[in-house]
Length: 77
Length: 121
Image (tube, rainbow over the protein chains, first blue to last red):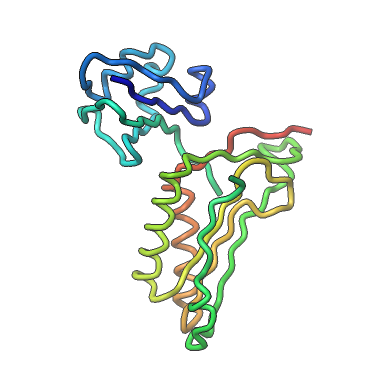
């Protein structure tokens, strides 16, 4: 199953790209995505995570076809 | 895409029952932490920002008995130009000012938009 991961602003700098496609064997909770990405894991506390454009809790399951966005603190305006 | 845009409805502008219109512009300042810049580049998680800003506008209109609109530029915005605009129209100025204040504060706090880069001089 493929999941699309999007990284914005500082998250993009940490990871080195703004998009990653991840192949997973089964649905995983959001918190496990951090375990799979060492460059983003140290910053987990500062990031909000959205799944399919809705904020998601660490335990929310991510499944095939989902779009997951890692959102640093906003600075618009 | 160059901007997120939620225009004040034409119907609202034509509703002459509204005597007060407040327009807020957030412009790019020439100094960032004391250092001169030429521009700021903005990025956004567009589908989510659109959804959130639309909801904030509806909430502003409901809570402040007004009509509201907003826009936020994406990409490079030079010093002196407006990155964000909020417009609020109401019967009287109390609601118009309060609605505009609420909406700009809410967009800044809740919309997934970032200052991605500073263009330093």
